[in-house]
Image 1 (cartoon, rainbow, N blue to C red):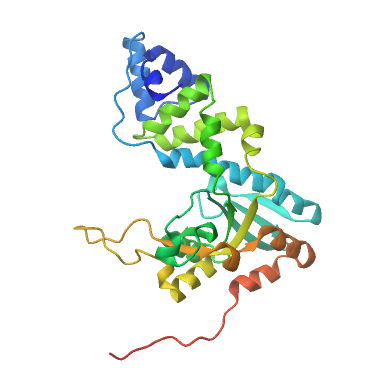
Image 2 (image 1 turned 180 degrees about the vertical axis):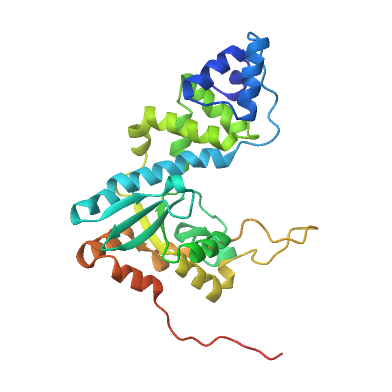
Length: 299
């Protein structure tokens, strides 16, 4: 099924799909569908999409896969050693999870590097296969609110394509909902997207998580180290300080590009350290400082 086939469905059929997926009122396009279903149930009701596909929604599925695999296959292995795993998703903050023991906490934000920066060598001096981006302003905000935060990256530059191929094979309400939310946003869209994501994983969690090979690497870098790279290597932050044309504001997306091989560490190595020594040594590494000479020109 494709978007045009979805647009040809009568309003009453789309209404049934929304109810099947558990998408409640409050989403602008969902409410439009329900209203059309009440008055003109057998007629089509979806307008031509106003823009491009909504990548943020499609990335939601990729991100959820990374988080679930990390929770179930990596964090869970710490629990027999007396660690508590706390899920912070409902709080809507920088932490996705945290590892806790002995009154200490290692806060974690799970990310996915699934799109290769093909111009990385020319722009930031890193091989495209060895380069992952971290949002500069997000790292700044994270370091201020949760100073010990670490980013755990699923580095898999072909995962996006595997997920796309998987959802292309969906059928029924899940396929229809995927196309609806990939093209129509509006007020209340995020809540509807989250609800679809729950329905998708309720039905297909095992198959989706199987898209991540067991050998795929999770890599770790602290928000503090990201900021250190930003200060020391400004070339790694293209666009920093560049103003949007005519608006006098900074660009919304400014990334710090880090080397996977040289500036991140394997999660398995961190997990082994946690099991052997507890959380404090990892916190000490995040908080480590060193004297440095800072340029201070008078002219």
